Image (cartoon, rainbow, N blue to C red):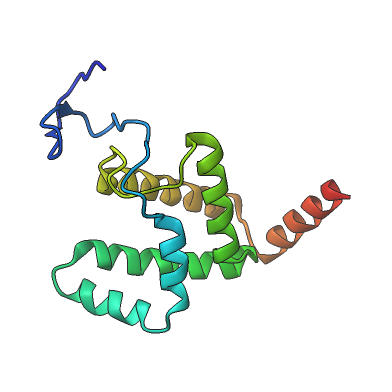
Length: 149
């Protein structure tokens, strides 16, 4: 791997890495991140606990709380179920990487998450610029239904 700009030293292996140079995920410690999140979201105390943790010094809890809330807003807008979509993302990941997303998989999760957040911000701005509204979403779902039949 050639790194043009060193942004950090990997805390695990001590290797110089660029924030744009995330390794392909590999099998981690065996815990399934997505199934754990799905189970967490079924617990009515999970979001309040995240919020309280986030109000303290746990920045990852604060970010996850806001992402879950944004996901709930977006899922109601696009008429898709978060749990079903998380399971689909898990299946895609297993097909692509041959393993579900797991902790300690060789990636530095905060940077990977930040990169995905930037993508979500850009797609959301794109939708705003395109004037996407409830009618657009309904038209999209009708189009998908026609493709399936």
